[in-house]
Image (tube, rainbow, N blue to C red; front, side, top):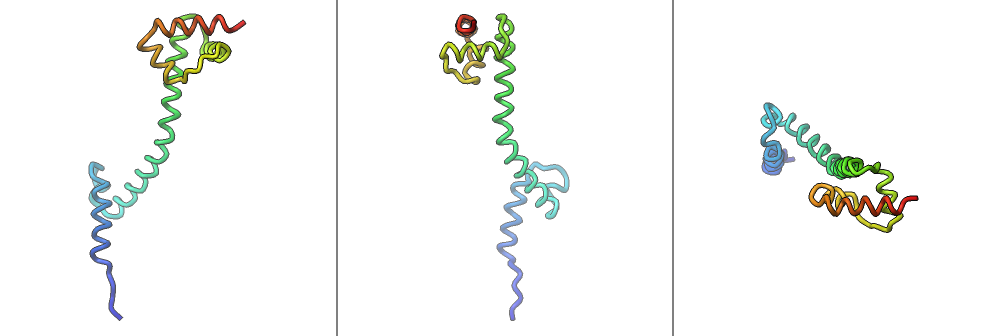
Length: 118
């Protein structure tokens, strides 16, 4: 029986992993076993953080809307409730953009939300 060592495919695999580990510090980009562990862990973090990014942006938008609506005398929850009752259908990203870039339009929305609440 001939001994098989998988020379070329194994080398290709290593090259792929080392390419992905470029920019890592120290042994994390130089030592095969450490490179493997680092790259797999990096993939896990990337997978997790693609989901967390969405949550973090929503939190940021809510913070901005809350700050802008409180400056105009309305809590965030009351503002959102008023918008729902008024039939305004804007998502939090759009509301955040309005609060930052078009304060006049946001003022109008706050007034509309105040009027819709009892």
